[in-house]
Image 1 (cartoon, rainbow, N blue to C red):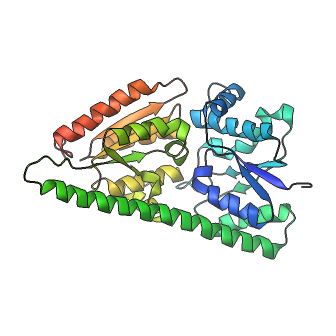
Image 2: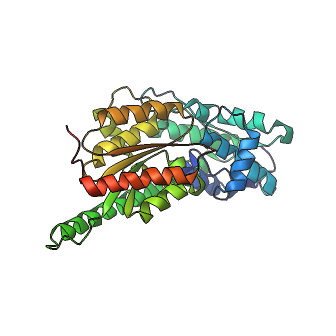
Image 3: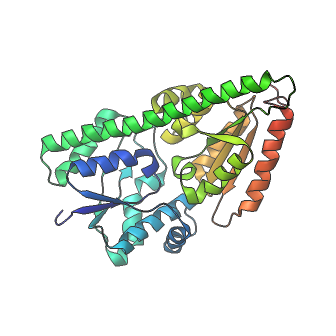
Length: 332
């Protein structure tokens, strides 16, 4: 690949899982990296216009980020990796596998230069390293420099993940202290805080356009959001087998493990999915049927979803948590 100085990374899909790794790796190889701006209405509209109706909300949003990078004119190439499903217990939805082809076909008239790679087993560090080393070789970098770049990038991703998990554990610790203070108030006037576990793919939970209104509503109603994706990923993956031995998707496994680890520390669970996500439709149903002892609200959002209806359901859910107390009306 020639004449590449600046590489664009769309702020969508697996960027919220591996974005630090990707950006740092490319920067260590000497490239300038431009990440598309956070999602807004213009980015989403551009992605919806470029996509077929049948793809999910998150895929449409991703295409909007690709369009924004192409329109900006500052990128010589766009990084679009393919994450495979070679591991039957830690795979990915087909949209991740086919993403380079989808982007190339969607923007064929603009002929974008794409930097692609195949990550065959994302949960296998040794294999993932080999995949990144192969990308570095194709980019023309010296093997020693590529190995160093991957080492630095993986450490940066691990540090970012660990910091997020540690901050969230501190939040849970503080909430527990506040609950004890409220419980010791003889007047009963002190209202205990509510911890709401948000179970959603990172590209939903941390996208301000997709989930921003929902997060703001929970906070406004007195809840504190705990993100299921911001737990220790390795520990959550291991615990996920207590929930299911056959669940085939890595991120859903991490979310299931987080629920198993945290459901006794939270007052309620909000399952948030983007229409029409096939894996989530199965995963959410399994959670609703099998997780006992904590109230669960299942929300599905799409391009036409208005915030009013969602906020009404959240208000009712929070009222139930306040009125009934944690799990008071459940059995099991």
